[in-house]
Length: 198
Image 1 (cartoon, helix red, strand yellow):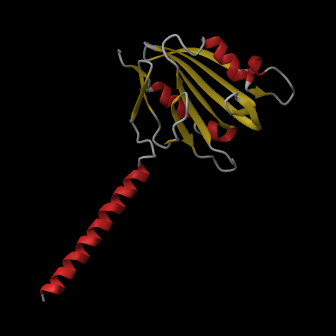
Image 2 (cartoon, helix red, strand yellow; image 1 turned 60 degrees about the vertical axis):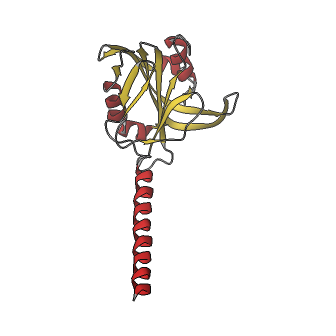
């Protein structure tokens, strides 16, 4: 009798442990999703990422990498990389905008810099410069940032935000259709931007 009760108790304990571990595993899987309203910070700024975006693996030089699943018909994810190099570091706005534009080629061989749409805005009292551009993206990799692959039909939405501790760079790149489908999410991220007062 005692043996049967002990076996039942052990069985129940094992079942309970499995349920608890499964719950933890499920929660960990969900943690890759960015919950709406979750704030990230850098350079004296805070912002909230869109709820549908996921956090990618940590990468050198980046504050955060957000990954956006491809729209129907697109093969690749889009990626929003956030950079902060420190106060007075990372170059000026103009050189960064020119570098981003030069990472694109145009089908007719024209100048990407001339086609880029650049705007100066103020969002929640912060100075923001945005850039939008379509073309073939020269994807780079490696320590010397060599061009690894050229991706036609890509789009860039970028923003440089002036925080109290320096500039923070947001570079959203991916297949044109996917970026356009996420345009309102990217703008919502920018509109969530606030100074931390630090």
